[in-house]
Image 1 (tube, rainbow, N blue to C red):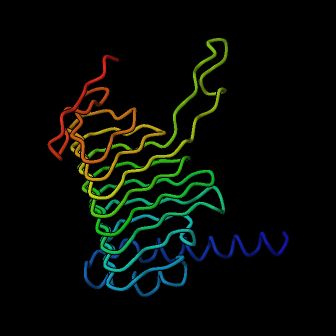
Image 2 (cartoon, one colour; image 1 turned 180 degrees about the horizontal axis):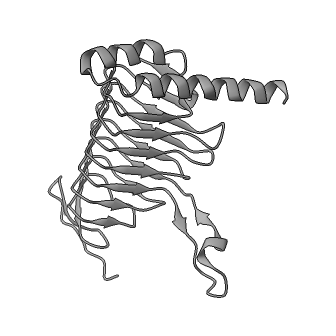
Length: 231
């Protein structure tokens, strides 16, 4: 085993030992303080006043950057495993509620900017990049999937045709309602509202209200008339 492999396994062992040893300490205040203290050596960064409940899982912590006053509740899972260039960034005052699942895969960056709230059991997954802006509200059970299976050739299995990875951008001050799904290649413009259960397959202009499957803009928050397309 060469020096690079030795370093990798040593780092992985340290991460596993610390996260397994400290991750399930149930006392909320004491457990969170201990995790805050000892995790600093294995993460890319952990800011001040970070609150990490018991039962939060991390993989490849050296690629995870956590800002100040971030809150991670029980059952959150953050994985940057699988590629050395993966990165997960949580800006200051980001809140991840119970059961949030974040997966950066295959040279992927998942960036959540300051003040954004991610509700219970939301899933964010690459391998495409995902960028969520400042002060967004993401309700429970939203799925944000920056990849899509290619299925053009019926003579091949879908699995063998690969995936797209165009990426997803959700700009500042957006509100996504319960169980919204956002598909690969989409940009949701600043200040937009996406109604519960909508499936976003195309770009949404800034300050729009969009609903339905697929999501269509029904109103502008700026009071402008919306011209609906025939497709």
